[in-house]
Amino acid sequence: MVLKRFLPAAGWLLVAALAAAQDPAEMAERREAMVRDQIQARGVKDERVLAAMRSVPRHLFVPPELVKAAYQDSPLPIGEGQTISQPYIVALMTELLDPRPDQRILEVGTGSGYQAAVLSGLSGEVFSIEIKEPLYRRSTETLKRLGFENVRTRLGDGYFGWPEQPAFDGIMITAAVDHVPPPLLAQLKDGGRIVLPLGNPYSVQSLVVVTRSGGQYKVRHVLGVLFVPLTGQALTPSQP
Image (cartoon, rainbow, N blue to C red):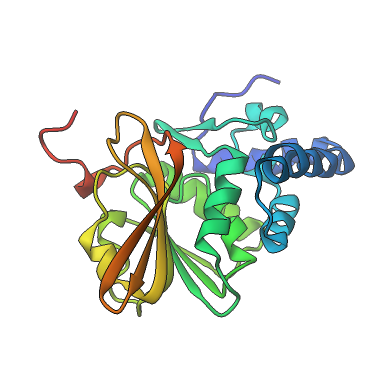
């Protein structure tokens, strides 16, 4: 079957049909191998995170023709110039954020919805913002269809966060920025964390953890990464 590479929102209903044609046991085996060989082997140890990565069906969050590649050790294109992150990076960022069942998490950059789905089982509530309307519609439909009921999505510029909500226990930015957006710092609880790729959006960035404590912010650098740029207010007129 040949399908248009990036389908409109309604076309993403075909993802479920395509995935259903795959052997569920085979997909579970691929997820197990992904966790063992790509994630645990690189040092992610949190059993809650590992369980989430084993359970969330990554193949339902990629374009239909990439279902067979869903569990490989790399990011994949999802349309609109965006990607679904490499499984290891999804797991690592989740472990660094350390979400808890009683916590409220903000995600900036819903993309495919996969990271939000992983956070869903580890958090009380997940609020996710996507600036590109086709991705917003696809990810919202996918998350709802798969039953991730504690994830709320919004179409908008994530640079400004979700200001009408109470402060968040954790914030994850899934695209590169050269500074931590002040509105997001203001929406972080004392003791909370922001995990993000920080640095030149058009070069290699550093994955960092920003922790708020008593009005002060501590930054910890983890490793070098390469993310697509955060769009919207994060891009200044002088940038390409």
